[in-house]
Length: 99
Length: 99
Image (tube, rainbow over all chains, first blue to last red; front, side):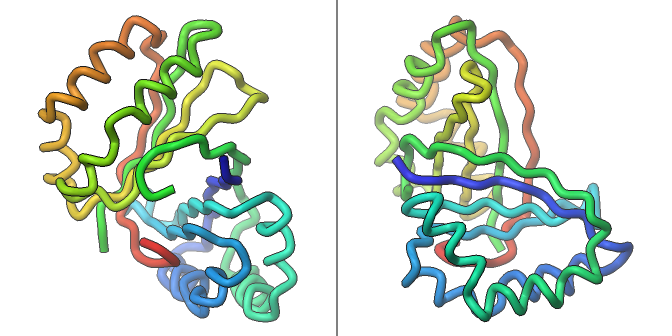
């Protein structure tokens, strides 16, 4: 079993692709700190929404990653482009393919 | 860019783990038909809900997979344990780690 996180964040109008670029920058480092998957996705039906899905070795690995300089910087740069509307759920990933 | 699908299904009371077992059975075959990730997850805060997240080479690959005998059989067996309450969103997975 591994730790999962699924969520969305709403961006200010027209800023989605800039936020996506920030979120997908410098992600290779995550593999060395317990991240198994980090997927950033969109759906043009709701063009100011960004979807993330993450799988980590544990919740602690996920929480610790928020202290990485590259992660802190991406969050800091993204914040002004977000409305503050977030959704999120923690999950226990129990099986499947590639998990 | 790849095709993503995220969704939930609600199970009849107490049947979640049986549904999870069905959904995670025979999944290795999916890797040969364009599936990159198929994650089945739960959260005990809502103990009759099953979360799925899938990444495929394309929507066509996903749709075609529904005709696989193992997939059809799993759906057929799971249906009586589900309430019929589903949520789902199609996504364009645009980047990240392991996608």
